[in-house]
Amino acid sequence: MPNLQEIRQSLLARDSEFRNLAEEHSRCESQLEQIVKSTYLNSEDLIRETELKKLKLRLRDRMEMILARHQQLVSH
Image (cartoon, rainbow, N blue to C red):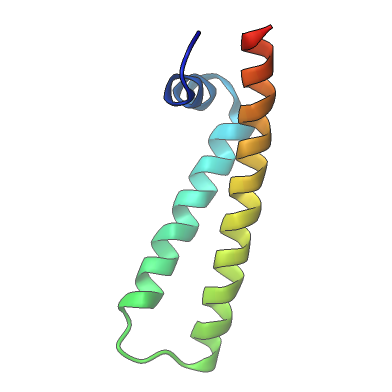
């Protein structure tokens, strides 16, 4: 039975929705890193930071749902 990392790699290669979610998650992470590196954060930056964190969580939740569904399929 494949482990989680193997299932993730398989989904990245074969599931376009999972791959798109992962790419968007990565883009959000990069944008967050840019904001955090700023020496001064204005109110817009703080709002954007919060929005990006929420979006990252929604993306991660969706990815985890897809992963769980595929784990069930593999284990049955």
